[in-house]
Image (cartoon, rainbow, N blue to C red; front, side, top):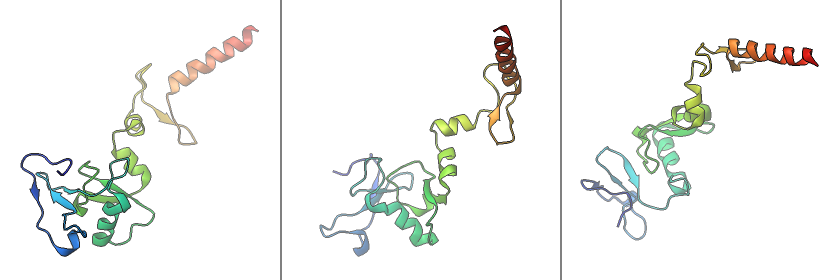
Length: 143
């Protein structure tokens, strides 16, 4: 039984480079065109031994300092048409993790004004920053 198979998935035609010693296919094509890796996967769900990375390098050339972004969002997919070599930062921002969600914010949740950048590139809300500075000044003055 191949994990992750759904009704309608079609197995790839076996060729010598797609089979291991037991004559099993290493991937099958699902209904979305993903090449689903059927061999071992690591704890994060990605193919072991970097098979997705090896497939992309075979089609696009070396990608040494970059990481692989799965455009289809299927971790076991090894289809090079569904992958792109990007920087780690861009890969994080394309995802749906906390850093990507925070990067999309453009307005302050407290006062609804737009964020601006300081000279170090940090995002901040001017009205809220000024209000906190005035509160600190008032508290320090009262002592």
